[in-house]
Length: 356
Ligand SMILES: O=C[C@H](O)[C@H](O)COP(=O)(O)O
Ligand SMILES: C=C(OP(=O)(O)O)C(=O)O
Image 1 (cartoon, rainbow, N blue to C red):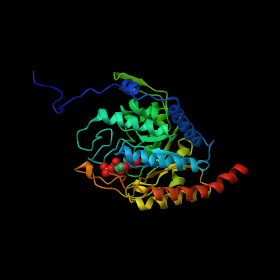
Image 2 (spheres, rainbow, N blue to C red):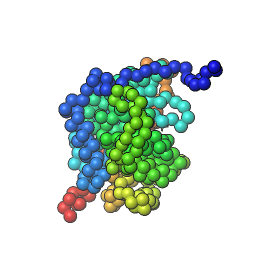
Image 3 (cartoon, rainbow, N blue to C red):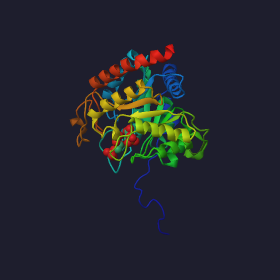
Image 4 (tube, helix red, strand yellow):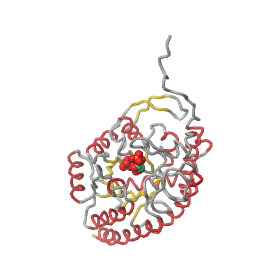
């Protein structure tokens, strides 16, 4: 008999089950409080009970635990300082969806050397999420591989479904079972409708294939996620955060009988992938909010200790510390300045609406 399967599979390595990771790296009471409070803050912003601006900010991707922790310590202090006007959550992205090929993130290849040590990637990712939450700083991530949430989603307060997977039924089903609010990006070509369709799909119950906590192939049945919203990230080399595009998104959401809750990604096609442009997008969004566009509930910013990016290394020891190895980010100093400036501007509006 000729071989019928695995003709193009060179290896299958069994992974440790999610529950074993959780026993090795358990959640403490204090960490659980940070995760749950973070989710509740985001939910309150989405339902209009909390009028602060949600800010998902942090590196395009995590590749160095030490630098990520240094960033987290700084961000926690800024979160506390600006807490009256902004709800700051750290972007902690471990999975990178690629347009064609490229490094697929820290979980897939944590040693940056093509050894694809996913077992350690999951371990270090879980450990970093625990450490960041232990600071009292909630986390945000993109979920890409449908098995990843079983390993780390208990430590995440906001999740994204990215522009490259927004039309995928697998990802919509996954989002329907996630325990935290989820942002759905518009497609890479700029279409908003795919994000709205994803949002509607994820609100519903689904049954699909997945793994359970013991790592067994299982049927997962979900109840649907009521805390979804769209994220405008621009597309086809064009931004989509201007008032006309925001109004168009509001109309489409209303037509679909969905709440008008929109996040704007200051990076990606909204910045033309030029990190210097992110501040302009942020300023524009703050002004739209000040002028009464309450449908804009939050922003995403790609920021790192130092600005710009560097090529994926042949030799990981040659990397510059605190600089992105995926999309270019704004530097920490600029992040602090622009968030402080925006918070002052938003403060007047928040106080006015509280008084009225
Ligand atoms: O956010 C990161 C990138 O924009 C995304 O992973 C796509 O990257 P690529 O087009 O370089 O593959
Ligand atoms: C890949 C990302 O974004 P998008 O899906 O919008 O391209 C990202 O935020 O890292």
